[in-house]
Image (cartoon, rainbow, N blue to C red):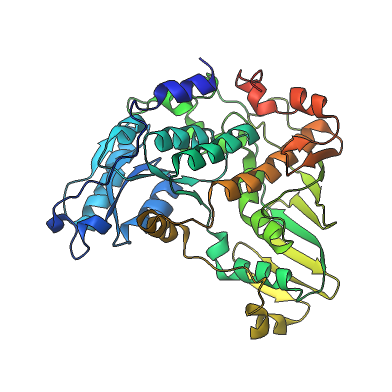
Length: 430
């Protein structure tokens, strides 16, 4: 069964959107039941519980009613947190996410799984009539576009789980760059942290509480090794993720593209290199990479694996601005740039949204757009995937962001560079 068949066959039979179930008011405190959005949280790792679920538990218009993870012990830990927050024992636990998607009384799902499940699971939820909050990024360019089309077709609310546009420091950097505060921005540099390298492990027994086949899902079969799931080494395997480039890059590169006014487009030329991986390395995502993106407005974004240093720096014809460390210290050629209120009133200053979880719930209630809608996250992921492709190619590649096609050597790129699709035995799809 190929990936597309897996998605289509696993989708629930009813594709029509279902109305929110009106539950008794005593379950919700002071908030009217009609304003309560019921949520099922899928994927209960640190991001799923400590960031996403924790944020939704604080929102009066949201109600977490179910939790799910392939590792059943995590569901019971999450249930304890939910029940303590609400003062009851109502939260249901599931090991198979399809049972949450099948529940007609759940309005929306929160997906915090490994990357290879993001798009398939989101599309299955959309087809079942759910609104979707999903962690970034997509795994491939092709499935990212399919997800955009699915969200539009179903007319459902979709939000990628990225916080940067709401964080004041990155909001300010992008806004200042867009207003001409440092003149014409000609280059941006993003320093991303390096993930450690690991050797291939020997297969190990599957824990009793882990559904390993379901964890693999649409990925090709692999023997179970404990550190893949327990220590998140899946992030460094192209079957499941894009490494630090698509993980950390989704944060800083988003701010970079906004700052040069290309967030709804993408690069035109990409050249990248990386260090050779050890022969017995479990890691298959690039390490020690250095990628240069050139855009149609002649701006460039350089993305480097800088070991442990995290930063973003905008260079303009009249100065520079930067942030060192994650959401850390701001600096500039002139610190008064951060104090000038006139820039904040400029029409090109980037608007600052609510945090992504709150914005999602408000959008579900009001049926409005989100800042990180499906297309926005797809454009960002495309940029990062193109960096992978350039590294694998070993030469400059040319991309038409409007058509989403390779502009030169198209046949070569389509057949040999979309490497993740080949790895999953569905490369022959157009």
